[in-house]
Length: 451
Image (tube, rainbow, N blue to C red; front, side):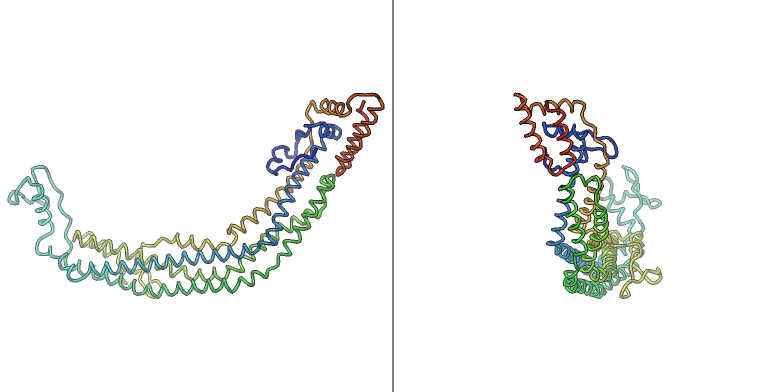
């Protein structure tokens, strides 16, 4: 009669909560006899036993994991700190490298020789030079045929808009020099910010090493004891399925303890490893963000310098001046006295992602155990719901049960039938030994219907 244990999510589909469930265990002579004799209670008990077995397997698995693999939590917490530290170090090193590269390029652009070449257009107005080149390259007219009217060159093919106003060479030279000095200053002071960050990184890793021994000493007894007691209670229900309909209050007490204490214990172990390290790495957040901002500003300013050198336009000169912080612009002063460029920020989301790895409650091993605890509570709620669900037999179940009983009896003389009837009563004792109520009903059914 006993079916193989089914997974709890399969059982959920075979019974309905708080209503009438269709009995589906009338699939052989003995199970059908029991279902009819108990008005479906035997089917209900069978489904409950299967669910309790699955629940007990879950409890046993969690018990063994916590008892033998608690170091997984410690290792995951340590790895989270190490990974976050590595990510922060990578962001720090990239920002410093970007600043160094930008400083070298800015200095090359602002060097006296290159600036002299770039500003050589001082002897020839920008409008005239550009218009002459445009007309000559068209091949349609000669230089003498190009009339200049109201800042517009008129060609046979149509009108060409006037070139942008040229930047004053001296102002251009000064702007490039200021931009070069700003980037060089940011690059020079990046070493101080880098030291702040690297010190925090080293301290974080040192903190992890100090706290691992303490984390190993955190006792698991508060979690293991209620799990063991719950497992013992579930085994008792499997052995005495009639008690499922009136379970011990101890099960509810153990479930409350498990729900409250296991997640807290998991967090405590993870926090012991990572809490001080997390606080230390938080101290690196400010310097790293500023390094990212300085690198982003240097890159933007470098691009603006190059554009100004290429175009020598007044608009690009003004754009460069807007990017370079000055006291008169009331720029924000960052750590170590570095003036931050207004409106430019690095990719802070990368830093936020690195720090987020330190959230203990989201570590995979802790999330897994939390989910197991929730599953245990959910499965027990399902057991209670099944116990309160009224079973409705299939319409032809009585006919199938009676037919099955007659097949078990077979044919013969009255003495032969009485002998086989007694054999069936003994077989019932063996089959339903763990369910006295079902056994009594089945024996009564055999006594009444065996003819």
